[in-house]
Image (cartoon, rainbow, N blue to C red; front, side, top):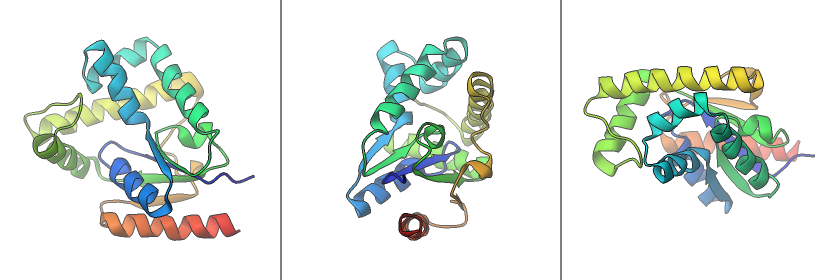
Length: 186
């Protein structure tokens, strides 16, 4: 049975938060972000997002805590969840992957850090963000492969893959909405 849930996965900086907010607003759904949840775990421990990701490689209980929260919230309906692994934990959801060249992602993240602040993250250059992003992606891929045998960026895991580097935010939201409505009606 299909759930009225959209899961958004994707690389750091691909627009999961902005897309999730836009989709939730247009659909009247609630939004949950595992990235925000993870950042808050880091803040509670007094460490940055990069540090909590490194710690999670040594301490699987961090990923387990995030995964349990996703499974718990995934029992509800009318949700947009941005999370690398929600597609796996909520298989009856509409699963979307947002892809983006990591150089563009680093520019977006750096801009966000400089202009709007990003909880638990700091950087002095785009190159620094790019290197951190490469480490983060590699770390997450390693953790998820080791813990679950998953590769979260495999397009076969998703109902829809959208390149957020070739579409603006409104286009991305509309592409997802159109595909989601078709999926719900099928």
